[in-house]
Image 1 (tube, rainbow, N blue to C red):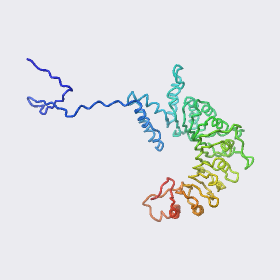
Image 2: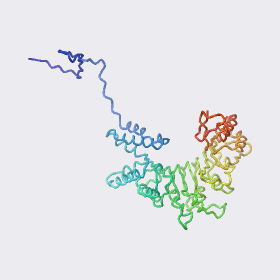
Image 3: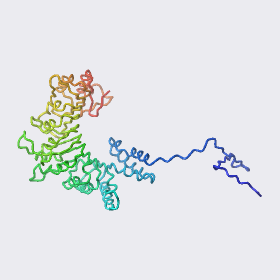
Image 4: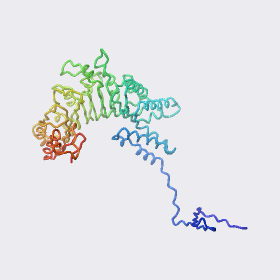
Length: 448
């Protein structure tokens, strides 16, 4: 018995229309289209840009905590999709670190520290991985319940700061007061001049029989080393204690800075001073050259004739485009209104946010101002009359925002819309609308 072996290249596909017949037939499926060539492999540079886009941290800024945690978990799973991605994805993943629990912070610090201990001197790069990959660290979302957890967090950060030489963005917890030990570790670490953003830095409350000078000296020493800062947010941890230690010999005298060496922050663009009283640190910021400052948020303590707010605006108000006067809600209303010369000391201002008591804004006769948006807490009939008289000299003015009020949702009765604060806001909206000015609520919404 003989047979003939036929080899078909490429291997043929046989169709058997009657597989259960006694003599089933087979038909060769002829390809009508040419065989598809294998896809070309993308170079590593292209994959690196794809992963960089996928790990982009900008899209997570407006997410809620739960969504952000899910996105970071998905990024971690993406690192291990294939072995060729791992070397490219790990540096991108560690570039922006968000920590949500105290246990995660402990594990992260332990991993960074153990990796640094294993780093030998044979390698050409002096800094260990993944510590040198970290460019942004955010611990503001950690939930704390005990005071001892704050001490533990401070201890972990003291251990962590020296291992992050390329740290550029640091956001601290709102309840955390860095100890002098942690401040020293941050100040002496390699690459402190690369720090660009420092948010949530609080000053340690002074101990008994110490002066305000000692209270701010470690923070002052740290800022002297951070000449590359672009955004700085300072706050005082305990308002009552801060008030008690803000001792002024005379209302007109400013305390001297902690050091004869002035602060140099040539790149600082955004400065936030929440509940920071008049102090040597405040005076140092007044006398520091800040040529790039455009955004300022400050808590006015006592806006009398010789107020620190007036002194700060006189020194740095020339190039400001955003000014926010913000007091905590639990604070009592300050006795004096903000300076009426705000528009004079800040001639380039585009957004002004005021707090109670509202000042009477003034401009010289015939002068105009480029102000576009004005934010106030709630409607005020006296301020509306003054604003209407000022509008002809604000040619670029576009909107007024009520930061503590929200428009009622649709479907509410007409009587409810015309009563109380809602009625005042609708009156503002009608009167300002005639002059082409919009009225927005705290969420920047227009009812239409």
